Image 1 (tube, one colour):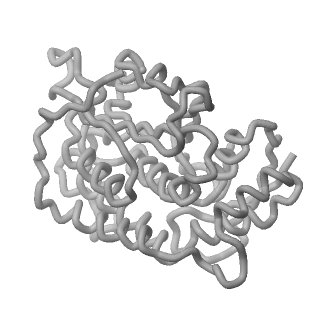
Image 2 (cartoon, one colour; image 1 turned 180 degrees about the vertical axis):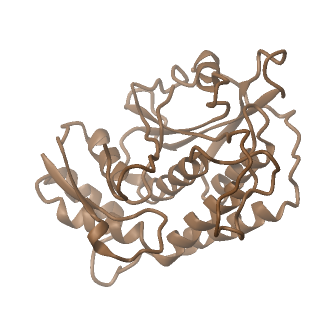
Amino acid sequence: RRSFSSPPLDSNNNNNNNNTILTIYHPKNKMKRLILLLLLSPIACTSIPFKKVKPNENVQDETKEDPTISSVRGAASKLTTLNDPNTDTQPSLPTLIESFFQTPSEISSLKEALHIHSNTAEMKTFLQTTRRALHRKPELMYELPTTSNTIQSILTELDIKYTTGWAKNTHPDVYPGTGGYGIVAHIGTMSPTQPCLILRADMDALPILESTPHIETFKSTQDGKMHACGHDGHVTMLLGAAALLKKMESEIEGTVRLVFQPAEEGGAGMKRMVEEGVVSLSPEAKLGFGMHVWPGLPTGTIA
């Protein structure tokens, strides 16, 4: 059993009293242990997942010179060029992970390193820039060109391989759009003999007119559309976790599959991705993690 202190995610409140102590049971499997640590870090992952589809080369790039993409790509590039924080005072993240798996009882150094890496000024800027960029341009169901291209640009900047064309709309008579804006990315060995798990985030917004006060700089610019369910936060959380996972890729004994899912709000987007092969895709996934933000819970709480 392990206890963790989780600070606020996207907040300007520096009051450390908001931290919540979390106690979890520590699994024996190495991959599960590492993912639980990531899920409990400030930039964790998202809401749950689950087969083989070829990249869709026919999806038109509808946002070629979009300033939204430029801003998030710039923030992501600073993560890739940044040296490990505190390298003069502690070992690198991969070294700490290796030590942790050799001596699991010595968890404090790894917790501290994850906390440092997920709370750098560059990481906070990246998370805030990404979340606000997505919030400004909400898209619905299977029609997610800007959202998908934004995510792709960040994955490219982080040097994370991915395929597109997932979650095609098979019911255009019910839901508008052709779909195909889902994304599946991988970090790790891609070995079929090692474990693979899924981390998933939903991408779509709701048909709601935003009237949120005091957020003029990143309020929805799409009339009648709003990220009212927090999926902009989910995508940001998964991309933040992806950035951390990429830093420790050399120590991952298996594969982490990142799933960005369209049409969660009533369009059965995850069902489509399962039918297309997001689980059984080699290496076959045996486990899926996700989470959903909930405004009624105190910051730092996982329930």
